[in-house]
Image (cartoon, rainbow, N blue to C red; front, side, top):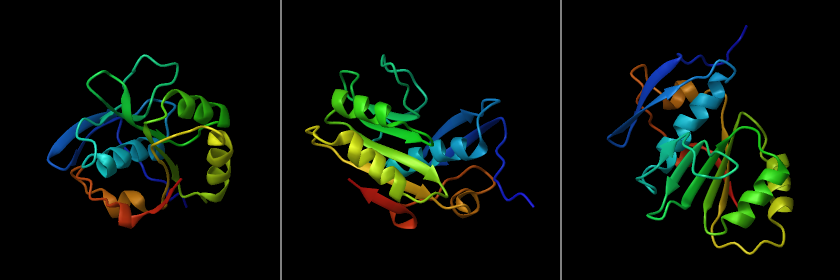
Length: 160
């Protein structure tokens, strides 16, 4: 029996009196789409300009991002796989950017080790949040009309 969530090719999501449309790419997992939506809803109160999947002129493209008036990232969210090289490069380049890395139904210990090693020796003045979305996140945090109801207290979050 497969308990993996399914998301439609295109869907409107609602949170905090805002809405956005996410399109699922053919090679993208439903979990990846949901993590982007959940990150957006989770951090929208802190970063009202938060948006999903836009290029910002960097080699890397954030899954979720909020930019300042000059176009520099205030917040950068990643959903799923990240390499040590990517984390290190981003941490060096954007020392004042709040980063969040989300995983789906995964232990955070290996990710914490990876990020801790990647940012070692880099002077930063913004946090890294590591987030585990439980396997039942779609049922718990998303209704049939696309309304997202999620809080940081609902999740395992480690701040580095």
